[in-house]
Length: 356
Image 1 (cartoon, rainbow, N blue to C red):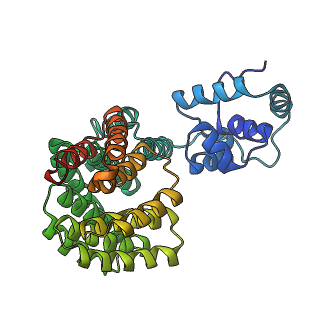
Image 2 (cartoon, rainbow, N blue to C red):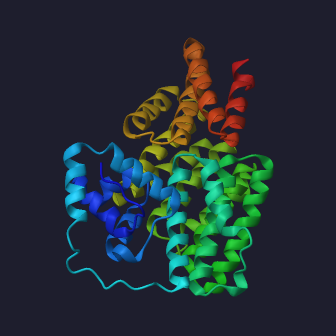
Image 3 (cartoon, one colour):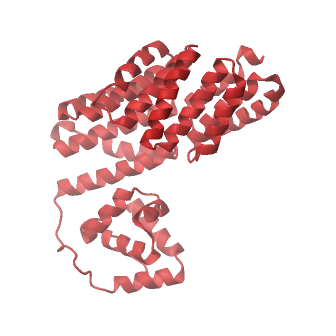
């Protein structure tokens, strides 16, 4: 079997061609970002994947079938046509490219709740960083690293994690304000409100969500999410009828924007609001819609939908046994992936006076 001593973007691109995969399919196959694969094919031999990515490429080649391996060997033996002349990139460009690739992989890790690897990648970038020595591009990547580190802490969700997330978001806010990137500044402000809601300050969060729902700095999808979260905060404070009205508006917005995952999340939130309003028939109807339309690609999504479903089932004495089973399943997944905020929510539901 042919082997590669040192992978560059050229060899990585040739392997994609040998496997006869699209860029998107190849990225998913390797577990890297689409932009990473596009960068390999654009820069060719001028870029070199990180060592752990090289190992991933080694594995992909080893697992390829014999015809694909033969095609890859044939492609390797051909002279690259139309490729840019080989030059040595400047150290700054190389560092920026590698940093960008790390952040793309962090996003994938957070989507899968692989917190340990995400933390390793982020620590590699943030430990010993000297922001005052970075150029504008470097400062942008530094700010993104702070945001993703805050996202990591928010997803883990202990009380200390939420405090740390607030500090990291605030630091990132200052970076993007200095860079004069209003959209990033507003997105961080939205994340800070999410932390406010998670710490139990629902009224304050609802007020701030309302402001951001009309903030032109944000894109339409983020403003629709802010609108949905107004309803979430209202429902947590017991204002279920008002919450339902706002959530319906957000649902219509997600439908117009063609955002199916957010639309399914809105159905889940509507189910809980109707449960809070005492309408179990509608609550079950909405949770069934959510369960039928969400892909549940991540452990967090599975925990959230199971917790909401269990909450509704536990409300009716006739389905309480099933509700406890579903809640136990959610608790197992949350514990396995370190989703501490969800674990606290599950325990709140489990020990609610309504069910004891």
